[in-house]
Length: 119
Image (cartoon, rainbow, N blue to C red):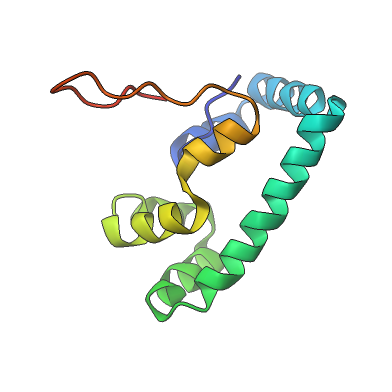
């Protein structure tokens, strides 16, 4: 599966025809499974609802305005803003919720004194 977890990674996929074909194949395979398709639809509805809630947050207004004007490039500006990232994480239950929904194992806990593994 392709890694589209960051704006840079997603931009790389969008610019590479072979990676776009792989992404389409991955999506087609996911949607072919009725259980995963339903889970994906539910997750999508939840995310849309969450985004609408976040848009109403005065602290998030500048973020959404910037993204509407400047697209994916604007998102890069905010990916290191802990306040914005925390609000998204809290509102969406983090990446682990999506991974669990899709039947992927949760990330392993960090080793004692170590950092979490890269996804």
